[in-house]
Image 1: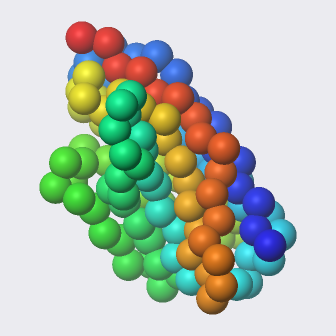
Image 2: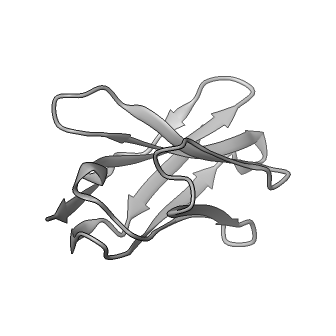
Length: 115
């Protein structure tokens, strides 16, 4: 099993920045990729960024150029640097890990962007 704990969320004004962290523990060696999802109020959870164990990254158009996903393999921490935040970025942000078996999720951290 893999345990994921997110941190770093908060309230920020539009145009500001936040950095989220996701600490992973457990069966780290089973992870093939990690990513970030978010769920806005009244909407479904959506994928927007991922990174493979090889370091390949992927972003959706909604965050490309503003958000950067990275990882510290030595510390087993996944990061999300968010710049130029917009009110529509508001939501509950989840860290996820893909393994050879089940996907794993963190509990989420709230990001609120005020206009």
